[in-house]
Image 1: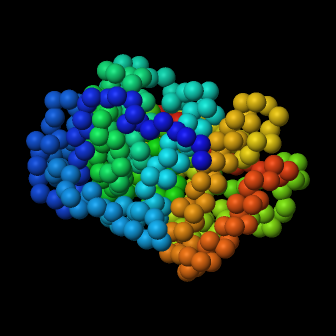
Image 2: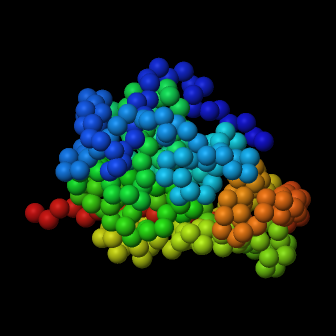
Image 3: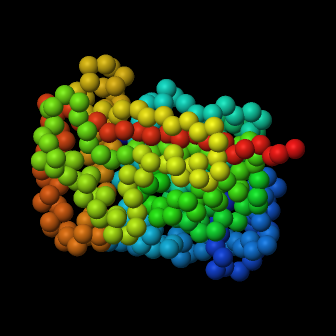
Length: 348
């Protein structure tokens, strides 16, 4: 597996004051009024508490570790192998996007919100790039590093629950790789719209796991095991109301939420080292490693929970997937989708 430097190897000295927010908890407003953060929380029903031991706990299933807070809502693991893979995926996306962390120009940055922050790698790099900004990352899992830049903090919360941020309070909202976890996109986008300041930007990034091929080297339909695997993950998540490939159809949802100046960009992502171009070959190597290293973690939940497979059946199926993924005579690719949209300026 490709080595990725973890964020806690970078020598940060600021301790991450990880919090949990939930409408089910007792009010503790002082936690959210830290002078190190300029985020504005709606006080009508704002509740918070210091991170409880129950959120630090995890569930274990089929030799993988999962989130405990609102258990079962996300069907993929959060253990060390998965964290390494997620960081690798981040570096692949940055390479694909010519080393850019975001699409739209940011002037006088203040409050950035990273929804489903995962390991927090994007939030941390943004904190380094914009030291005068406040960066807040939200995730169901408390897996982010303890030592982070002084302008970065992480919250344990559910992106599909009611957001507690005040109206018109955030300058930039970033959502990446959220298709495998979101059931109600209109609700999520409505909350993002309400929270953003007039003129502020929303950015959504997703890789759509759907094998395609331009040169006829990939067997058709589900004869290619990796393509069948992606289709089965989609089918498994569909049992829980999740659309794995929502990332290719956000335009209508974003417009319906009220956003304007929408830009939808797509990029082809080769899977494997078959491209002749050195840059694409490097990206393809990343992509194959991201998928290969995630074969067990990405399938075991959707297959057993959603499709009713037993773990042995999953392992047997993955043998063929691993074999075919290493065959560079097949030239598959997937697509990366990026959406940028702006909340209209307030009417004078």
